Amino acid sequence: MSFRAEAIRPLFPSLSFPTDDGSLPVFLDNPAGTQVPRSVMEAVTQYYMTMNANSGGPFATSQRNDEMVQQTRRRMAEFLNAPSAKEIVIGPNMTTLNFNLSRALASLLSPGDEVLVTRMDHDANVSPWTLIARDRDLKVKWVDINAADCTLDMGSFEEALSVRTKVVATVHASNAVGTINPVAQIAGMAKAVGAWHVVDAVQSAPHVPIDVQEIGCDFLLCSSYKFYGPHLGIMWGREDLLNSLPAYKVRPAKDIAPNRWENGTPSYETWNGLRACLDYWEQIGRQYGEADLPQYQGARLNMKRAVVAVQDYERELVAELIDGLSSIPGVKIAGIVEPDRMGLRVPTVAMVKDGKSPDEIASILATEHVYVWSGDYYAVEIMRSLSRPQGMVRIGIGHYNTREEIQRLLNLIESI
Ligand SMILES: Cc1ncc(COP(=O)(O)O)c(C=O)c1O
Image (cartoon, rainbow, N blue to C red; front, side, top):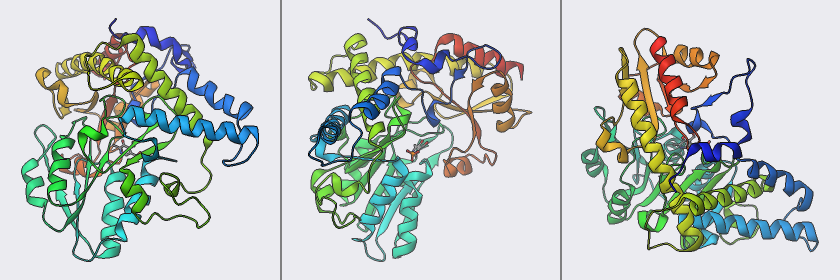
């Protein structure tokens, strides 16, 4: 059965929570955070009722907590096709985890070593590296974008790499213009010069099946509040690296992966929510998964099939959105727009319209209860590269959005 948004919408209570005037809101702010299914909310409540305790105690609530921790890691390993649950580090958000990682890697680097960052990345995968460069006298190399279609300039990538490159930090899918980058190819290029490759998969995780083994990177980070779960960040890293790198930790905490990267007491209630979110993805795969993926079995297969099913649906929707926007006078879209290249982007579209600033457009849409973002959304460099000092309007489709919602948005933009 092909995926249908109408079938899963009733599972998300906030989608039917009316606005002040009784209409239903249209959530197209998904790249900034998604709504969650009821099962995620209930899992957080259930945590407080049945397992609210710190880790490592001999009593029932603590033991239930620790069992949940194992399950959540295992589910997350399945989602990313990680070889082991010990490679799943969970923290408050992606940015905090990446700063922890950069601080640990920095202690192994010497003046003159190089870190490579791109002008497509969210600042959460830029500043952790430029700041260690400042502190340890490292050189920062920048990879540019091709402004015409907002793809990475792979020529500038080749040029930026050298034998001194120690870290290559790249975004999998842009949070601004939606471009999907060839991260497996980049992982190969990083490996060839002996650099660690850090992938920011925050915006790809809800839309693109992720397989860390297939990509071949060293670290990959994402955030569950972007894929219909609670506010948490997840870092996958190779087990040998997670065990051997000098993680900053307090002395009594366990000195094994992944615990040595998880400082302090986590918000375990949200971990139970993450577990429920991953159960939701598996359920979507069971119900709608059709893709032939012989390399996966069991839960891993269902989760991959789920993302493929959602991806197929979202591609149709984003093609309609781009087509509709392109026919409105005065609208300009940044990024990939050709119908036959929809496979190279996630359904996140940055646009402007003559005569109104991005903030004004977002505010007008907000009064009609259509939620979109404006500004640079921390993708600072790409807005500079595109000469957009006021940023752009960002419309981000999620799997619960419908054709009717896209039409409502297009009508409003046309009328502005
Ligand atoms: C591409 C990308 N990377 C990183 C982040 C930061 O994630 P977090 O809020 O979990 O720190 C975001 C947040 O929007 C993002 O879109």
